[in-house]
Length: 339
Image: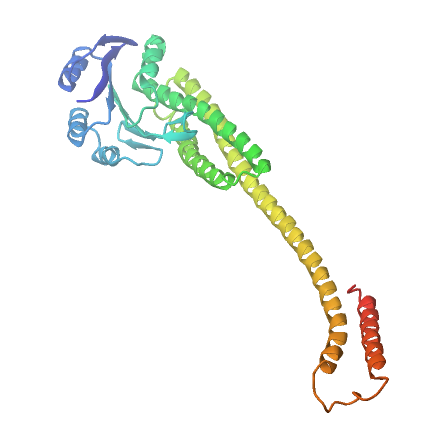
């Protein structure tokens, strides 16, 4: 049985550390009025069934815990509360957010925590509660509230990590880094996952608060929960602002890409215009040279019977014709700004 810690508490103090579930049940019966807190880490189906049979857990809640991949929620089965939480932690080495899953069963005389990831640090929660026996003496609900508070507290470093990543994106945007588009989309996906983990906690806390009067929740626990509620509301607001910042970053990136493309098109257009002017000049000179070349080529053919071959003025007339044609073409091209 992957039991991380197993203890029986009475009046806020640990009175026994049973070695098995059967011993936990017997010890709890001997210390009437106390409750057992069992911490499990990734139990198998058979192990989960054993816990469910020992403490009479509802089969629907057990099925949810068995399948995993549940959204954060709070459900009540008779006198038993079943909570699903999505803890998260920021991994600095890869600059990513890792999400886990935590199931909490709280009922008369027991609190069962089932952890499926490395976070949250439930050992720290246990130490903190054992250091505050007056709070632990308020029963299993104190465990649930303390676990929720720990999950919410561990969202703080995640918020800081995401904020730092978004600041880096702003620098990448204006540096023209080609990898920035992929990073924006990856970060947006992480922020959405973070919102899916944090937003439902607001509803969970509201549901618990609605049950304060009906289930006679201790006043100190009510204060404890309201403090966690204020904290999670601030975190949810930050998550929403991150999403808006990333949407703005994507819009700015699109604008910058369009601007760079326009500048490149403008440079290409200017180059094309310069090339067109050069082509015009080359074409103009080619046309001017073509007319004399045509005349010279005609009279350069060695045929006996050709007009003007016997005329004394033939040669000067040909030269004059070449000059006139060239001059006329030059004037025409000059007026059209081809030259």
